[in-house]
Length: 498
Image (cartoon, rainbow, N blue to C red; front, top):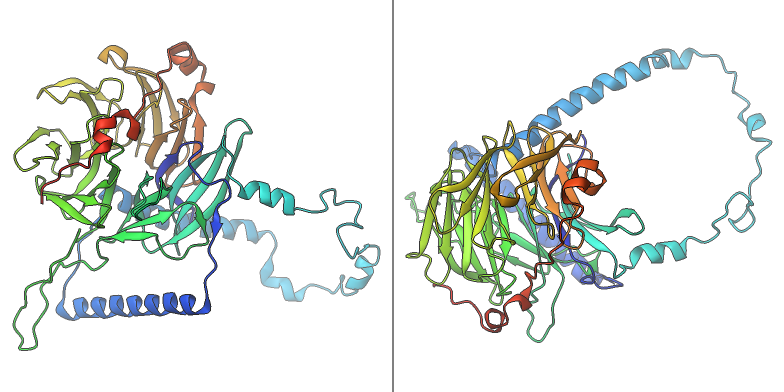
């Protein structure tokens, strides 16, 4: 089965540690991790058996198109693989392999002319005698390198892969990876370190099919555990039976109770992370405490996209399967909010960092909407694709450059300057269903895509003549969305409701 890239994110240049640390576990620590893993597996098996005994059938709990496409692609790829193998092997007639005459019985005769060297130094055909230097260079992260974070799902395992991308050298490779406990659904970079006295960090928060959010240190290689986690893996979906046979109330869970579908880190108030879940809620996490500060209940179905405003620390927007988007003032989210309703389930939301009052929303019926947060009516409505628009991303520096990706297997590049969308280029990426798209923060024409097959794809869209013609001479605007964009906001922590 071809591996799937379910989510993708970028890390800006100069953020990562030049020489990452390597984990060295003591025998006691390794034994502790093994024991905890065994205990967790045992608990899961016991819970599954209990559900089977009670006749409980759990319903799907992640964004439907991603999981459905994962199952379909698995079946189709396995059938195609088996058929292809049968056709390729038929010509070799392996069924009669044992009946062939022993022409090559004297194998030694065929090897007599081969020369064996005791080391690479003596072998004249090996020009690179020592590869240690090259390995050290690949391990180091240069100031001109970007990191790309991808959630990779394969048949037997799931990983968070950290790629190194250098546009000047034209290089892209996997620097290291992390084994994940479950199918990854979203990834978000953040630099907040919850340890007192520590400076800025380099972390990736990963949401998956469990209710728990794992935060991994990207400057540490070979780690087996996350730097810290938010919430619990145990979902309190059903009531437990008491010893007397009666139904006991479900144990309270601190955090989500179902899969985490999207994450958004607040770059202005760095200790705040928002998460949307299949349990229909949005949670604002205080990373200093590692606990929920506020839980928002404005949606009636799965929350699969959300985004903090790039310049207003208190403003958050979320989108749901219930076909609505909700804008919150996080200082008083229960009373200060606004709701928009769309033609389909909301797939993606993104703020327009060049027009701070505007945001874009995409839906599962192929539409893209541009809205003003102060108005109920959309600025424009665009029929962008034939199926759900799973990727929606504005260029980091080129005003009006919008890229969309869809389950219809196409990526489209739009010029939306003046709120008059115009199609510039369309391409079938040959990646099957597309799941995600993200623009490099340092290179405004470089996008990363993830889909049903063929792994990660990085594409410099300026190589397309039509794109270069439309956007090539357009002024580049470096938008400061970091923590120094608003000194006053960054100096004080956001007041969130308890």
